[in-house]
Image 1 (cartoon, rainbow, N blue to C red):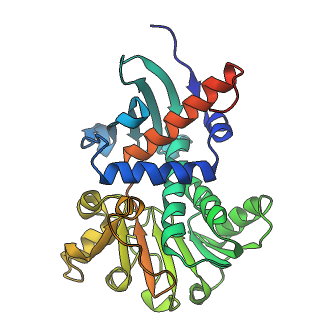
Image 2: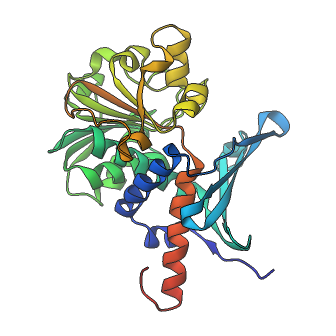
Length: 325
C-alpha cells in the first residue's frame, strides 16, 4: 500500500469554506434522516485513568466513500502542554476499500459542527441583522462565529467565557476577521439583547439563566455531548421548539435533553424534528422569529464524512490541475 496523504487544517480550509460546509450538512443530514447513511454506534475503548479512545465508522453510499474517525481523550494532557483531544479521520474508497487520505479531524469536527449550527440557524432563525451571544472561547467557538456570520448579518457579538480576560482575548483575536464589533460580555443581562446564542463549552451546568433570555431567540447548543454535561437550562429546553441533529443520539447522550427528561421537565416527544427531517421536507419548517428555538447537536460521523469526501475531491483535482470539481 502506498503512503496516503495527510491533510491538515489549512489544506481542508482551503478546500471547503464554511458556506460550502453548511450546504454539505444540508445533504448529509437529509441522508441520515432518510436512512441512506450507515452510521454504526461508536465504540468507546477505555484506557488508563479514565482516558478513552472513540472509534466512529460511517458510510455514505452517495459519496462513494466510507470513513473512520478515531478520537483520543486524555484528561492529563493539558498538564503536559498537550490538547485533551486528538482526532484523525481516515477516508476510504467504498467500491475497492483503498485508503485515500487522512485528515486533521480536530479541524474537521470544528468545521462541521459550526456548519451544522449554521444550517439550523438558517432554517430556524428569522432573517435580518442579528446580535450574537457566544459562550466559549475555544476552537468550536471560532467556527460557531464563522457559521453565524455566514448565514446572518451580524451587528454585534458579545463573548462569555470562563474569565473576562479570556473572553476579551478571543474578541480581540477575532475582530481582525469581521466588520462588526466583538467584545467581552460584562453582564449576564446582556443576553436579553441577543437574537442568536451559541454555546460551545465543556460546562456541566447551564451557562445562562432562562430569565435572562429575550422573548425571541435562536439557540445552538454544541458543547455538551454526554449526560454529565449541560449548557442550556431545563426551563429553556421546555419552552423551546427543539430540533435535534439526531433524535436517538440526543435522547441518549445530550445532557441538556437527558437531564430535562429525567427531571420530568419534558418528555421524549418534545423534540419537534431532526434537522434532516427539515432539510428533506419530512417535517414542515416552523415559523421563524416566534419565541425560542433550540438546535441541539451532539455530532454525527456523517458530517465528518461529508466534509472529508468533498475536501478530498477538491484537493485531488487541484493537485492534478483540473480546477475545482
